[in-house]
Image 1 (cartoon, rainbow, N blue to C red):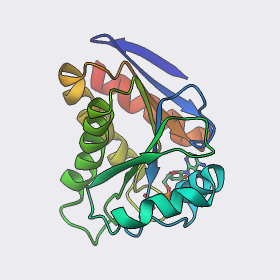
Image 2 (cartoon, rainbow, N blue to C red; image 1 turned 180 degrees about the horizontal axis):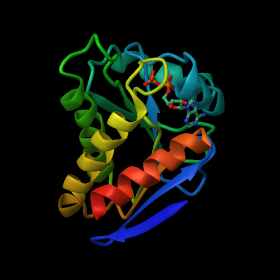
Image 3 (cartoon, rainbow, N blue to C red; image 1 turned 45 degrees about the vertical axis):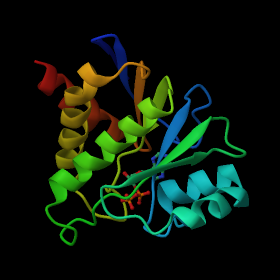
Length: 178
Ligand code: ADP
């Protein structure tokens, strides 16, 4: 588990379930374009939030790769859910700026809504097939670039389902900060 304080923002990587982060104001959904339940992260978040989340999402759908929208968290212990549509690897091109836009847009929404903390899953690295290490580099580079612009967000957590994925995140972050 890595925890760093950079420019007044705590940045950390943990192994866990994105739907079980009760101390975070916002959690990020690796959504599908229709903002429906689906599997993986979206399944866990919609199961935790209950059916009212899909109902709130429907008028906001469909969203485009790179886009983010914000909703309430319903039965989840958070204030908000930020839904990001990551690129499908090899289909939505160029993948890197589209994935970077997810992280940037999610952080901008958190700022606009004056949220203090936000937890991200590894967007696009499951069903959407983005290689984990490459995706991790995009995620951290984007977040590190955004740090000077953040004022309300003071805590950013990366939540990885698998231990090996958490380790890759820790290694990539250490390398970028060296
Ligand atoms: P995408 O469709 O954007 O690829 P997925 O939900 O399929 O999104 O997977 C994104 C990443 O999240 C994968 O690395 C997957 O292992 C991980 N993951 C799946 N379920 C959870 C969960 N409940 N909490 C955190 N990460 C999860």
